[in-house]
Amino acid sequence: MTKHKRAIPNRSFRVADQIQRDVAELVRELKDPRIGMVTIQAVEVSADYAHAKVFFSVLMGDPAECETALNEAAGFIRNSLFKRLQIHTVPTLHFSFDRTTEKAADLNALIHRANATRAKED
Image 1 (cartoon, rainbow, N blue to C red):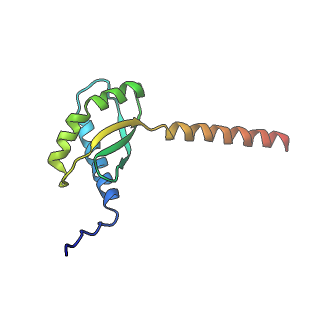
Image 2: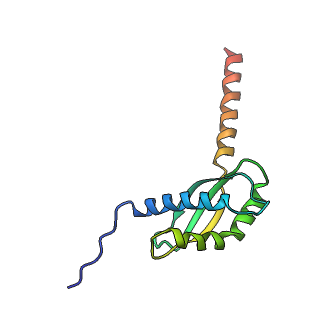
Image 3: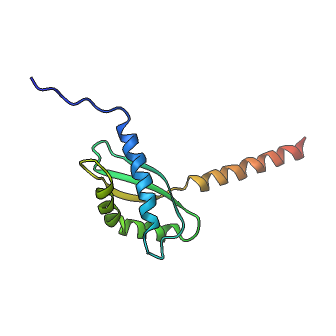
């Protein structure tokens, strides 16, 4: 009778967190001028660790252009992750612009407008 390995609790979260930290460091080392001031917001790793979706935001520059540049550099970043991570499979990286901050600013503006309208009515 063979024993099955027990799943390590929260392993995917810990792997995603480590990937986020390492990718943030590696992105700073890239020399591509299309990649401006990038912040890695979050990483979602698939259950089989084959793919990782990396969400980023940009302080300066065009998000679409930056996303293209990051996806072109994904192979280089993944290769560098092989050297840093101590896991069997390093996931393929897919970069995606995170629109959360834009949506939050829009909602904040809507709330502010609603409160201003309500104050005028009272």
